[in-house]
Image 1 (spheres, rainbow, N blue to C red):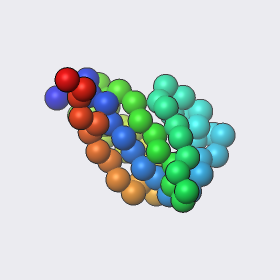
Image 2 (cartoon, rainbow, N blue to C red):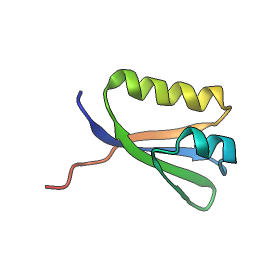
Image 3 (cartoon, rainbow, N blue to C red):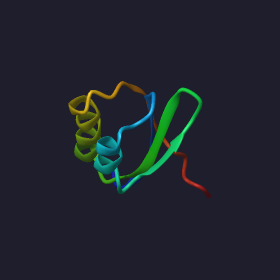
Image 4 (cartoon, one colour):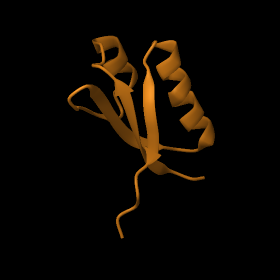
Length: 70
């Protein structure tokens, strides 16, 4: 897979604890969701990020790779 940028959309707002867990990613708020995006190293890293959402009780709405700018 290699390094690729991903966008994660989750329900609601993130607590400070959750923001700290994703400190190496960009976090922005949409009307009823929070958008988190950042570099994902490989498939194992992607699965780890998804597991972190589950551990923190965060509802993951969508995960999308961000197209590379050419």
